[in-house]
Amino acid sequence: MSPNEAVSARSDTLVRRVDLRNSYRVADLPLVGRLCRAAYTPRRRVAKRFVGKPAKTMFRLAHRTLGIGGKGTMRAYPVFTYTH
Image (cartoon, rainbow, N blue to C red; front, side, top):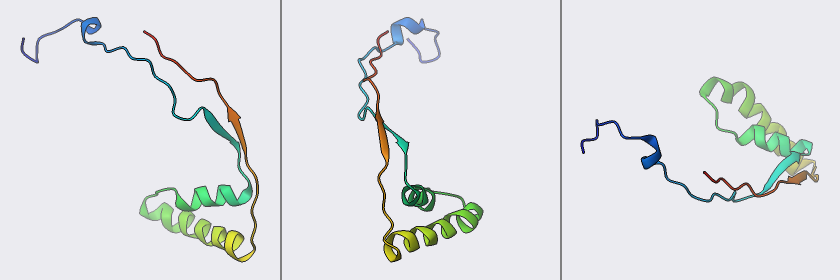
């Protein structure tokens, strides 16, 4: 059978049970956590200059110099199982 021949999708479908690695999601982050996320998210050059660098400076100031910390909130979700 050549790769260009049409085959029914059902015969090529693989079915497997899927479990999420982490069944928790972040519900709320403190200010220092949001600054950290903004500072270290990969960006393109212009956004890096106008968003990333100021966020990184504010994060370093808040975390290192001022010692601001905080606690976030996580929410547990049931484990998702995919069955076909």
